[in-house]
Length: 270
Image (cartoon, rainbow, N blue to C red; front, side, top):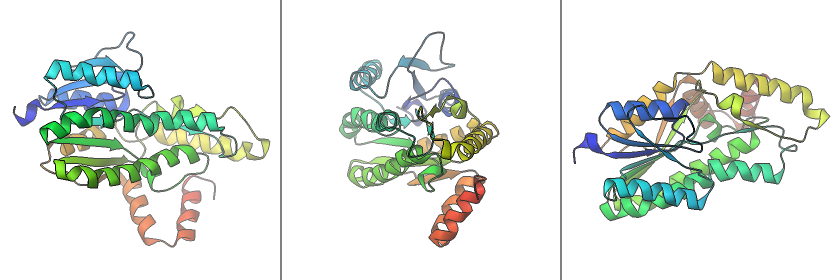
């Protein structure tokens, strides 16, 4: 097969980053499969759309099996893009709410990766692309569990990269700053409300949604994913946008207390 005919599986491909990436890669000649939890009224523009719930072992197995049956057992790239958030003070979020978030953002990535790795190991080739963010480096107030999933994802991907290198399989983090998607409006909210947090929570919620709405075009992220897919051996981590790059740099250079003060100032809670 030519490079352009690589098989790419993208989770969460009916809006935002996933949709932009699926459309871009399909336009470049890659064979792209996208997924959505609910296919009702949805279709892929140049790519095939499959049903998938990343929080379900059975759904993940069925999705990967469907792709393998169509491609002769070939999946060259999995882009673990599906994800969400929860807004609320750490004390307000229940264990069940936190677990629901981890089932999507972290264990969903683990399920998908484990499902495709046997196919990649057999061919001694492949790329696993996991979506983090600046929240995988800096913990943000009122987004503790979203950031916790991304911190976990960063560590998981780093270890995975070491383990998979002998099989010529790359594990990569893509970490953009705010991207203009429906994610802020669709994020979960903690059901429990503690009055002591109300004013700051409301401010943090509004600011997070505003930053996402005014974020970068998802196609910028898609272009980076294309760069990863085309690379002979991709870099471990790709930051996108000034905010993500600045967060990375400041985290490495600033004293921890100064960095935390800068984070509070940056989210309007200084």
